[in-house]
Image (cartoon, rainbow, N blue to C red; front, side, top):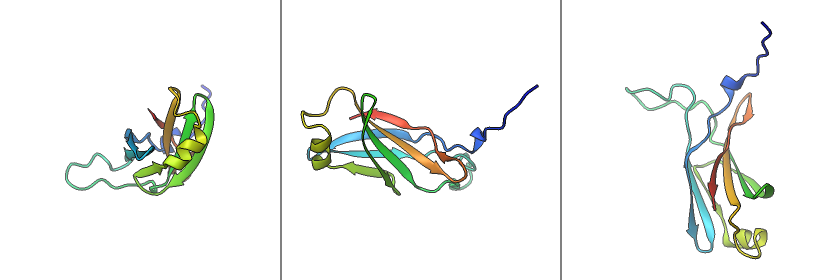
Length: 115
């Protein structure tokens, strides 16, 4: 049997409950990180093994409009940025995607929501 180790078990999980709320012409994005290891403890707080480093991407269909990183559980896509990226208004295909960084693996799977 041939086997290739891809270290997929080291990949960070997709953030949960990604939401985009309209705020002053822009969007406030918020999410909950998923903990890979030690996160299912019932007797104490979950232990986070991955840094709170997230990549936020704004997409229009398959076109990447903007990318930035944050170290918290929310990001603001300001009205000025929105207007620059979508001069005719936010399209139906506009999406925000958030992925968490994992040491030794890189960016994990993205959570995606409509803008």
